[in-house]
Image (tube, rainbow, N blue to C red; front, top):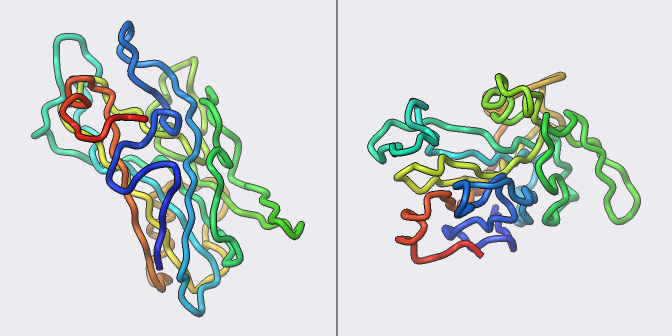
Amino acid sequence: MKIWSDSFIEGDMIPPRCAFAEMDPGSHIKLSSNRSPHIAWDDVPAGTQSLVLFMHDLDVPSDGSDVNQEGRTVPDALPRTDFYHWTLVDIPVCLKSFAEGKFSDMVTPGGKSGPLVPFTIKNGTEHQLRHGINDYTGWFANDPDMAGEYYGYDGPCPPWNDERVHTYVFTLYALDIPRLPLEGRFTGKEARLAITGHILDEAKIFGVYTLNPDVAGNLIGQPS
């Protein structure tokens, strides 16, 4: 099985238009277009009954004490943890791609609705996909302007003072079941656990992103 994106080059910078925030010289960062990237796949194995797509950040600081603090940096050596940006399940085998912006276009304070995602293909057939909540749900829990349940895709927004470039992995799983055995609200971690024992194949791509201009200046590929 293989997966690719026309929105970014494998291993290169994810474009700011697909991020939650982008660099701003006056205020460090500003909200960006937050467009879900184009994703396409092929060579799905025989026997596949549905697909599941995840996007997660491998490099979220395990300690937020220095995050976005003036005069301080988040050390590269700080232990890191995962942050789920996107969980999409019950993808039918007849689908082969998602257009850029299909599931997100601009930031939605309080989060987009879910979990149900009606999806109509070219022949008029409607499929019922489902989104999990992403980890902005917990991140904004104490912010009165942003708090809510964040379903679906919300793009990169690493700390603007992080010494490390963040890596964002998109993983597509082919499953031997037509519907993920979860009901109602679920997280990326819960969906990962639910696919255990049902995986026929998987494919991955990754992009990177930073909001630290000093770090961005050292990268070969610049945001486009």
